[in-house]
Image (cartoon, rainbow, N blue to C red; front, side, top):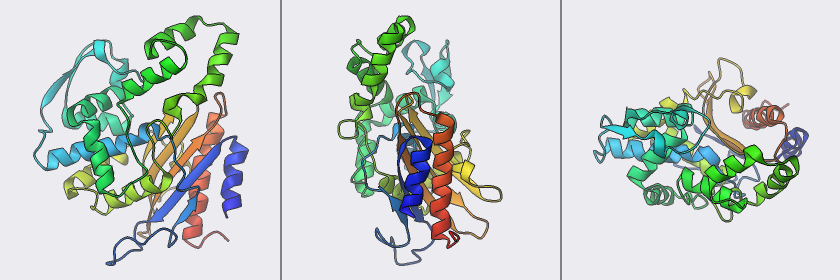
Length: 311
């Protein structure tokens, strides 16, 4: 079975790591430990989570809402001049925008909005997110900084003053200079789980299991995270391995063509549910379509094995 999973990733041109945990096999006895009723492939290997960390941020913010520490309806002005770079949402806005805290969570989980993520992180603090990870026993999971700080560190590791300078330089760089930057990119601190933000597939699958069973925080907070993950726009990773009436609620993450990840919960019509975390790594310029499909195929293979459907 592990050879099958390894082959799926290798044929797609990437390295992969995966953990799938059943949500409904622990009854009243609590969490069943590693090695029972689960499937793992390099499941405890440190990985760069990229935007998968937004699940942690959402859980923390929603916990603050539920506990009365933050008013979800409070309206906040997000400055376009101070925005965090990103490919979607308010990161692309040219004008200031006013949003409530709770609507920022919607943008963060459904379209992976970077700017709202950093505004939320500035409000609750990186330390609070890490404290919750520690409380939940996610010992391999550490958030080192907000997203803007992480991107600026990549720019500096590429020899520029920060991310904006790296982007401007890239627009005028020669082909040889661009090729050299691509060679350097995978060595950046933010892309090294021993130095940057990090997690493991098992930690993230366990986080989802705790959220889906209302043990990660207040029930209202867990329910809100579950609902919003069900509305994620991205459907070409884990969800690509399943067909209706199977449902997938997920959060994707990617970083500069090197890291492509997704975590999610797969719900079958027979009521059985599975928390999955898949992390991949490849060289810049790899086949994104093939890697996305591999994430879905590997997850489907692991879930089928746990369901006794692997032939």
